[in-house]
Length: 430
Ligand code: AMP
Ligand code: GLY
Image (tube, rainbow, N blue to C red; front, side, top):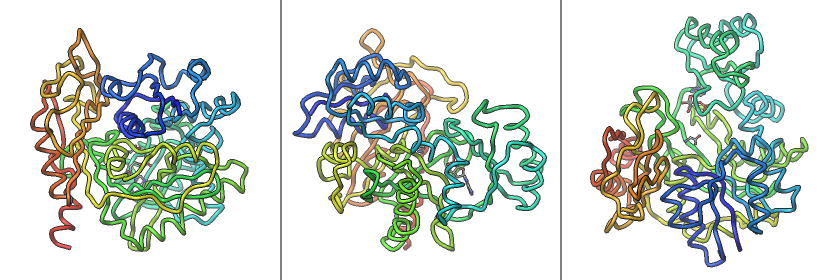
């Protein structure tokens, strides 16, 4: 089977690494990829949002399957265009991708189908939005409706902050088109988890849960980022909670999408708050999480490619998959200054010529923002590397991941030192 993988970040490196292990694979093309991904497939310089060029590339390369990593091309309809050209695609079409690309759509769908989520209303004018903020009371959350690169959710501790958030979206247009509609919602209290499931539009296959670390500094301080690290499994998602999430959220969502004429095929990422009253949806995403994917895939104890292919062809799914009885941690190394302004082009020390860490058992270095300049590996983005390790338990995985991080360096590198802290606390004082 020949596959095209779309994307070039840490998530796509983990996907390429896992897909490349498949005995069914005859060739892997990646657009645009990165120097780490180049170890596993042939990278071609086509951007992940260049829909026309990607359709042409898939045809020219005569691939059997296209796997789409990021949300932006899915929201732009890449899945629909490829399917119209007769290709098998892993990733939803634009109508189903609205679960991520429109928070108002997702919230309304949940309301129509009784799927548990924070109380909310949708607004396109400031005055009624401000009035609803007063009805809810602080704290509350104001969210831009559309895609905003993870920055569109504003947690407001006071009504003054809420008014500012509403003005930022609706008056100052800080998120452009994406913020011209806002969701105002109740603040949920609990522990967050990211849960992943596969669906072919009808059948559902639960994968695993992970926990992300969104803020840039230790102890959940500082501004939000794309994700500074993740671990899996997530102790908060015990068997009973997982069963509730499947029964109350995942299966009803897949059924609702089918019933409403936009069957959901691909990876469903459910951002959850595990509250005292049970699991509640914070958001849906229509693709694997980054860096959750880098933590989860090394735990998968079987071939990923046939699963992606079965989803893409609507061929039905197995009831379960095999997971290693190991814990996994991924620590993200970022450029100093991220998520604000930062410098790139800094040489990365510690990795071998192929961008891997020599002699580090159970460790994978997934590239996100890296580039090759004159044969030298340099930083080329905010999130630069994801250093992932497996261990018998979370303690061993954390120790291994940080030992590996300590061997890698570039000027201005920053990483959180407390990835896995919550799971460690639970493991050590259950
Ligand atoms: P989102 O972009 O919707 O995933 O939101 C980003 C982050 O904001 C989440 O990971 C949560 O930490 C926080 N958040 C969003 N919605 C809520 C909510 N209703 N209650 C509490 N925290 C929230
Ligand atoms: N790590 C969160 C996300 O991928 O959206």
